[in-house]
Length: 324
Ligand code: SF4
Ligand code: MG
Image (cartoon, rainbow, N blue to C red; front, side, top):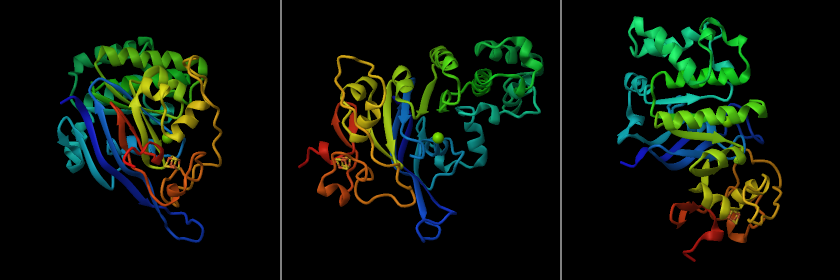
């Protein structure tokens, strides 16, 4: 199958512990019916403002968060029905890299121990091969093998992210969910980490789901891009199609805020009104209607759904509804 991962109608609804406008324990639809296919070997970007559900989706796919309903099909098998032990074994196939790698590294373990742990857990290296493998992992991410006995606090942010990448690679996964992997790093370090990730992706034929709020980063890296708003995908397209012909007003807004990658493209500057609505109380109809400069009467009454508007390009907006 051309798809490594297929997500079908995935939902993560949960009861909020904080009230909202006098309503007690409202239901938050953090991920609200997502369909997404990830092709083997691609980098699929997932973008949107913070709070739109990107991280929840990424974690739900790995079942670090238990989804409410839907299907997650990895290499033809629905892993949402997997039990704890089956899921534990899936960690060899699917890994995650976090924004704050420092926090994800045990401060009391040396780098050698951190990288050795997954090898032990899955029995991936015999005792006498382990050290060689750990050093190989360090070198793969551009770290000196002399660092093997150091502790996480001795490293810079960029180096910690390299350790996080090495740890993910230790099990030789097929899919890596990268959750804002460079957002916490100094601008000067970002390009190095992104280049490293690109290089490793080619070397090991990896597939990435690359989560970011930064469309410039995503433009450099991704083959396809999905745009998320309030728990839903509102547009998905090949990278160049999305940048040349953004069709959802939200995508246009996000793109109008970044430096234009192609100076031949004229872009109007659209400024978004207001903040992301509280996901515990999403707007009726199109969830974007409270901020959309193109809203029409029907937008607050009727929710659009994702429709194909061209080869590999789907949009959820009444403006591009060709059925009328
Ligand atoms: Fe804007 Fe209406 Fe399209 Fe929603 S459906 S994005 S409100 S034009
Ligand atoms: Mg996030």
